[in-house]
Each structure stands twice: as C-alpha cells, then as structure tokens.
Image (tube, rainbow, N blue to C red; front, side):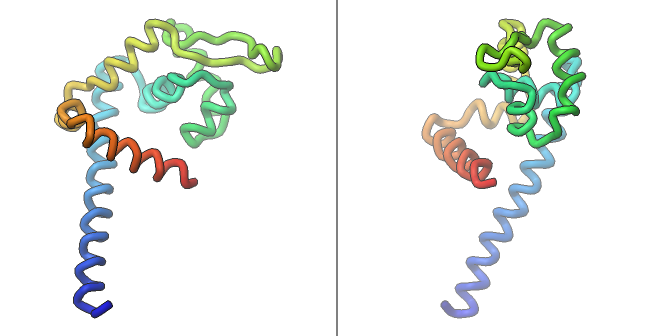
Length: 144
C-alpha cells in the first residue's frame, strides 16, 4: 500500500477514533444530566440498564465493570426506591438475584428517552441504522 493510501486510511481511523471520543463524552454528559433529572447517579442509571437482564450482584458488577462490593449499597438504595427486586437465587440460596421491578422498567424507559439531542438522534435512527450500530457496539463490548 502506498504511503498516501496508508495516510488516508489512517486519517479515516483517526477521525472515527475522535468521533468515538466525542460520542462517549457527549453520551456521559447527557446520561448524567438525564439521570440527575430523574434523581439517579450515573452508577444507578447504568446498573438499572444492566439489570434489564436479571443477575447476581457479581454478574451485574461484571457487566458494568466494577467490583461487586461497590454495588451492594447501590442495589440497596434502588431496591428501597422500588426500582429493583431482590430475591434469593433459586440455584444458590446464599446469593441474591437482582431484577428490575415494574417501576424499574419504567425508569429505564425514561432514561432511554432522555430528551436530549443524542437520545433524540438515536430515537430517530432507522431500524437498519440501529441494527448496524447495535451489532457493532455488541461486537466491541464482547471483545474484552
């Protein structure tokens, strides 16, 4: 490959990397704003999204990339607000299974609706665009 073609390919990769950084910063800022408006911290909002698929505290912590000990208090506060259901794990009575309550499902919908520019753009994307984005992001986060 010629130097010019490599430079052009590199510039595409550089521009994608820059867009990803801007997207991540925008998403974090807008998620924080929406979460704050709903009376949640970022960790609480992320945990609610992860709990859409029930799991133990250990499983949820692994999904969101934190230590399980950091989630105990977060789970307790969300449970006290009626957003999470905490039940004994049928496979291991010593462990607890965490799932969204009906109010938790509604809160996740409110988080996802967001009312911000980025959330509106995601909401306005075509099914094909969303499928491509979902598949790409799933592949990225699955390659840990």
